[in-house]
Length: 540
Image 1 (tube, one colour):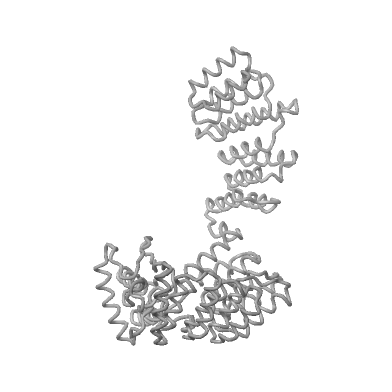
Image 2 (spheres, rainbow, N blue to C red; image 1 turned 135 degrees about the vertical axis):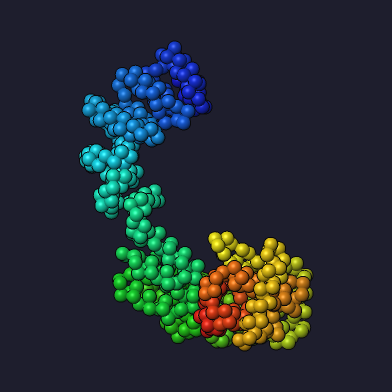
């Protein structure tokens, strides 16, 4: 290993100025002070490292007979980043010296030089200097460099020149995450919070998705309507948002507006449409959209599209049609389709079709606990005790494990999680007292507990696996929310499994008895309860 390589390795492990000074002394003794790599690394450490020293960096720089671009960059970078109030001005003085001393090609400013100089401009609000550097950027052909443009945005914004920053941003040929964040930060610093979010298509799209997933479609729609432009991703997001909330007719309306705006739909668009049709029982419309994919837009349906069609037929009670569709589908061996059919059989209590779906799941080797419990529930509601016993035996023999059901509610910026019959919450005594009151008031407006209680997609016929219908996790969450929020406050609950019929009926009665809006997001969709009515119209 050469002496230069040894010194460079020592510099890489250097963590103090005193150590650096010893290395520097060795460099001088060995005559390597003119070695480009060694001198560059020495200067970089002094100028940029937290253990360095800018005065020592200036001393090293002053001894260089012919500083190259990387030397200039280190000294300019060091002062542009230093917290000292005078450092940005010193950085620009070095930049001026570099521009004047560019006698050789090796000392010409590059993209990094401009970036560091622009950072200094922003810190001292030197707009005229920022414009001067901008001109040099254009002359040197660095105007397409994303890092330089991002620092130009920051430089102009630091001087309060938001319009100039916007112009640079709009003219960028490509933008990365840093440039987007920089522009948003510029708007925020200028107090233009609305522009900072809505001018960013990606952030706007994420906001729409966030509001929709939080059950707030009004805010999602407000953001969508406030966007200066909507691309296919944004249209897909708003269509899917209304679809999963069971508002398929409005999802259709957005689809028509999308086509009128000249936006070409993709497979995600149709997935949202089919989901909306399924949740609202729009069978005829769903069939039309499914055929429209291939006939009008040359799009090939995927497994999720086929699953939506099976769900569409199944929810509407057209189980024979759903079975025929699966058998004619190229995805007939996909368990998703058979599992979807099984779920529909539970809704309509169709034992025969449920057994067909279960048989295919077993043959495919994909039968799980949820499947067994679904069929067991169908048997139970049909008073088929042999079927229930058979499913109990299958679960035990295969040691099939069930997923616990959870419900979450956020109160005062804190998320509270509940399971059925939960006693772990520190306020469980208060919660159960409140639940008794809630049940009594719900009963006064017509709530009656179902005789067959379903728990977390499970049934009470499986005492080893199921829980009492009275204290399902969502009921505990509702009781806690009612106890801890002022009258009239909307409550939002997230549940990891499908809400059962009893809890669905309970929520409707609670919304009427307490005059509250309850939004429940379960594994399948959103339910908005208000005035004793659910947005799903009991079709879920």
